[in-house]
Image (cartoon, rainbow, N blue to C red):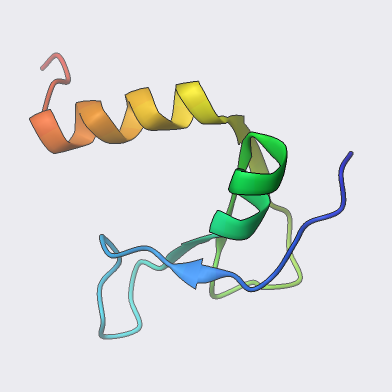
Length: 69
């Protein structure tokens, strides 16, 4: 696995009151073409790594609310 590049950045979709917090590393994504994602409440825990195209498609679907009921 490629070492993660920091800093981690809190997602703009995370709540600001300390609730559901997702972080990602845009510097790592730019340098390696993969997007690391983690739970900010567990910074020493695991990170999920997605291919950039898959992550972009996922975010686009969320923005479009394009999920079957």
